[in-house]
Amino acid sequence: MDILKKLQDIVCEYRNEKIELKPETTFDDLGFDSLDKVELLMKLEEEFNFQFPDDIQVSGVQELVDIIKKNI
Image (cartoon, rainbow, N blue to C red):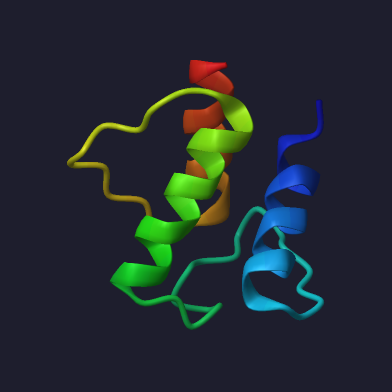
């Protein structure tokens, strides 16, 4: 499974625009605020069927991909 591609699809749907994610992309680059991050994590939990820790701090795409890989 290409997690980066799936993450890109989810972000594009969330933002309702075409966005190309790269491993070095940060959520600040995407203009995400804390609420956006929480909503994205909730969508990812549904998609990948696992739960992120409540205190998770994720700043970039590669970091998020690595966390997902370890938990699915």
